[in-house]
Length: 101
Image (cartoon, rainbow, N blue to C red; front, top):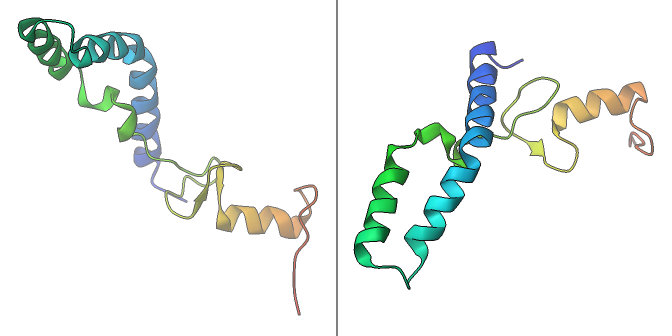
């Protein structure tokens, strides 16, 4: 089980990303628009830099929904390999068969 503080920090980042997504998108559109003047683009970059760092989507860490483990994460399932194996052994995942020889 991951530290609760790390899990909560990641959840706070998710909320910030959701909150600032529209504003960040508009500023990036202006900053990357070549038809705008250099001053307008620079101003947009400065405003973008004033936003919280944790509002950037790349700061979110994929974590297992069950254990909070940050590594060996399957995006499609939303859980780590260890949690997947435990649930598979208990027969809680339909279509997953434990292989042994």
